[in-house]
Image (cartoon, rainbow, N blue to C red; front, side):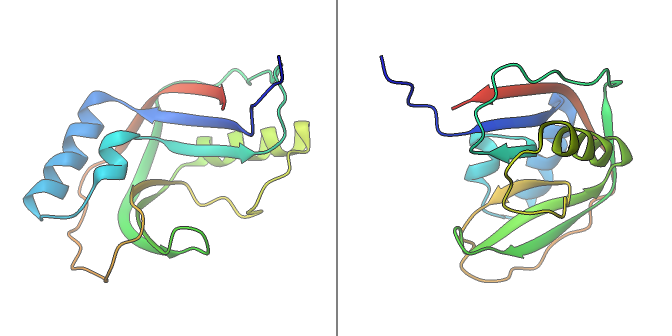
Length: 144
């Protein structure tokens, strides 16, 4: 059988309270969010390097995101993307550790912790403030 895997994703997943807090703010402000509803996560590493035996460092969960705010990323592949960008020393350390240990091929050398809310946003919309921290309680790796 031919291996059809095309990439390795390492990501952290928000807890149920964080997801509900985000959904509440999105719905109350009528902000499109199907991408977030379908797959709520923060990507740490996204690479075409299929390494099955990636050893994760011993990190303390939950990983906490502070100073969360909405932001628009202008991407080549997905147009204007609405994200929630946040600060997290732990997430940045995890990215740096994995990048240096495994020498992953990655598209962006700068790591900006964020959760994608919606790709291909047609126009810049008015964005509310986020007044809560984000909690990520799972670290997963998937070969897709």
